[in-house]
Amino acid sequence: MKPFEFHCPTKIICGKESLHKLPDALEEHSVKKPLLVTDGNLVKLGIAKHVTDPLEEANIPYVTYDKVPPDSSLDVVNEVAKLYRDNECDGWIALGGGSVIDTTKGAAASISVGGKDFATLQGAEILKNQLDPFIAIPTTAGTGSEVTLVAVIADTQAQAKLSYTSYRLVPHVAILDPALTSSLPPRLTATTGIDALTHAIEAYTSIQKNPISDALALYAIKIINQNLAKACAEPGDLDARTNLAIGSLIAGASFSNAMVGVVHALGHSLGGLCHIPHGHAMMLLLPHCIRYNISHGYHAGLYGELLSSLCPDKDLTGLTASDKDHLFETELFAINEFYHNTYGVAITLSELGVTKEDLPAVAKQARYDGAALYNEQEITEEVAMSILEAAF
Amino acid sequence: MANNSSQQRSAWKRLYVSVLMFFLPLLLKVGNLLSKKIRNETTYLGDDFSFALVIDNYPAKAVFKQVNGSWKNAKTQVLRPKYTITFRDLDYAYDVFIGNMSLQDALAARLFTTRGPNNAGVSITYLFTVILKAFFGWRKAYR
Picture 1: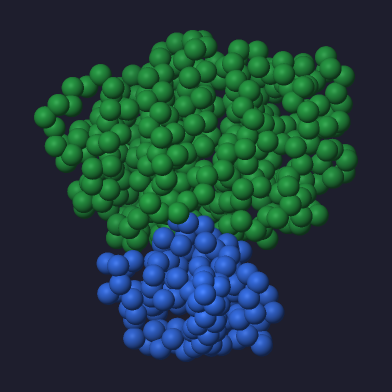
Picture 2 (picture 1 turned 90 degrees about the horizontal axis):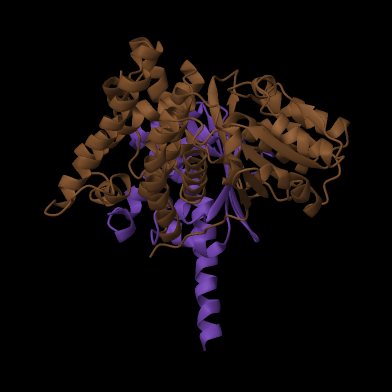
C-alpha cells in the first residue's frame, strides 16, 4: 500500500436546530467576540437570523461582514481580515456556501501569519500557525469546505481561481442545520449536489486516494444520490436535506485527503475565465471527463466499483469490470438529463454562454491548475480541449 | 551494526543528494536544449522565473533562474525565489532523485511542501517529471 496521510479534526454538529449549540461551541473555544462572515442574500432571506438569534440570546457580541460575492477574490479576503483585526475579534463564523467559507479561511490564514496579504500564501502546507477558532456553517450541500483543507479564491486580475491547501485551513467546528438549506431552489440544489458527487468520484480516482478516503467516497456517493432528487422535488424535506448535507461533508472529508483531478482543473478554469458557477461546471463536465477517461483506459475498473453506491438497486450480476465502468458513465449522463429535463439545468457549455473561442484559453489554464497535479494522467491542452468540445 | 549501516547509508545519501543538487541546474540547462517538453515549460514559466529546491534540516540547496530561455545556477543571486519546493526529509529527496519513487508518488504521499503560485508549481512538476523519466524511465516507479 502506498503511504498516505489522513486528517479530519473537525467537530461535527448535525441535525434540526443544531444552531442552538452555536453559543456552546464558541464557549468551548473561548471565543468572546466572533466575526460572522456571510453574504447579503443570506441576510436578506432571513437565513442569517438562524445564526444571529442564538448569539443575541446568549449575549455574545459579534461583528458582521455580509458582502462576500459568489466568486470571492483576494481583495475581499484582505478586507475581511482587516475588519477582524480592527474590531479585535477572536474567532470566526462562516455562514454561507463555498465562497463565504473559503473567504473566511483566507482571512483567518492571513491573520494567523500577522495579517500578511493572502496572495503571498499560495502553496501547500506553508501555514505553520493554528487559525483562531473557526466555525463553518454551510448553507449549500456541495463544497464540503466545512471539513476540507482547501480554500479556492479568485484572482480577478489573472482571471484565475487559486487554490490554497493546508491542514491549518480545516475548520474546527462544522454545524449542519437543515433549516439553512431548505430554501435552496432545485437548480442550485442539483448543481451543488453534483459538485459533492464529483468530489467523491474524483477522490476515488485521485493519485492521493487511500483506504479511508475511498470508504468515505463510497458512502458519500450513495447518500448523495439517494437524497438529491428528493431534496430537489421537496425542498422542505428536512431528512433529505440533512442527508445531503452529510453526504457533502463526507465527500469533502474524502477529497480533502485525496484531492481531485481533471473535472476540477477544467471547472476552476471555466470559473476563472468564463465565470461559470463551480457546481454547474462540475455537473456538465463530470460525465464527459469520465467518458474520456474510460475511452482511454484510465482508472479501469474503478468507476465500476462506484456503481453499487450510485445505483444500489441495480442488478450487476454477470457484468464485467468494463461493463460496469461504461454503465457508471451512462448513469451519470442520465442524471444530467434528468435535471435538465425536470428543472431546466443547462448541461452544455454553449447553453451557459461559453463560446468556441473561449475554449483554448480555458484548456491552457486547466493544464496548469493545481488540481491537474493530482490527476493520474497529465492534462495536455489537447486532452482538455477534447473534453471541453464534447461538453460544448 | 544496524546503526553503523544506517549511518553509512545516510552518508551515501547525503553525498548523492548534494552532488545531484549541485549538478541539477546543468541538467536542466541540457534538458532544455534536448527536450521540447522542457522548453515548453521553460517558456511557460517565463524569463526571470526562479525557483529553489531545499530539504528540511539539510544544508544543500539548489536555486534556478531562467535567463534568456535557459536555466542557470542562481544560488548566490536569488534571495527570494518565486517558487520553493521543500522536501520534508533527506530520505524522501533521495528516493525521488534516485528513481525509487516517482515525483507523482512523492506528491501523493505529501513528502514535500511548496510555496508559490500553483500554476508555476504544476509547470515545474511537469518539467522535473520529464528529467526524472529520462534518467529513471527503466525503473518500476516510472514504468
